[in-house]
Length: 251
Image (tube, rainbow, N blue to C red; front, side, top):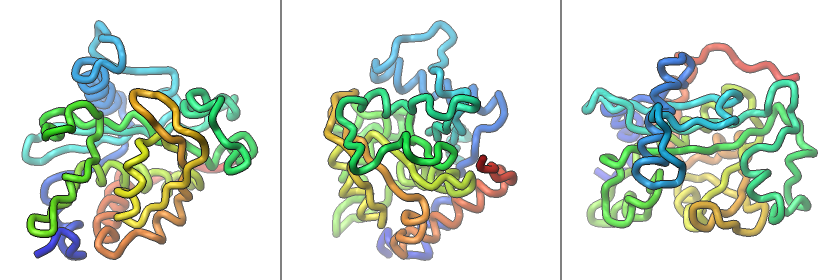
């Protein structure tokens, strides 16, 4: 049966993986450990830390997401949602700094939006044992065309898509309206397969390879998911809601 069978994706995900917000210090420590392993040790994007934990100034006002593999009984991936800084909401999000010279504010000006309703997706990382395929070792998330397989041998990228949908579910839970992301240009087509529209909001910049600043509307993403992705999203949203019962209040 094809990977896009609407009855398989949700059940298949629950059989092998789970996602949850990293709310405790112990779970946040697991996030920082994965990031150090991927960004510092494997890819060399960041310097090695003595404590083997990769952290930055944005972590204090971020909500972190972890993915666990039941087969390995361990955490295999993570991402984060960078929120507006409490007490200083117009403090730049990471992409606002990286794209300060290339952001097209006639398309989207983050400084003119309610800052409590915008966030940035960043630091998505998957451990190398789950992305160790040809051409994937040099990227942190490896959402590559080959993950969708071929017409004769289809497959579905549960880990990568699960992390992205988990972040969307977190944003929905927190009443975030707009998500920004620095993404590889080629990923726009991959997201479109899922029913997700990424809207470029500036020219490409060099940031660990060429990246394009883009935005997505959370409500439009949720409403536009393709029929075969919907059961997967519903499973992930249920997991997020079960472990993160309190919604964020906008001010």
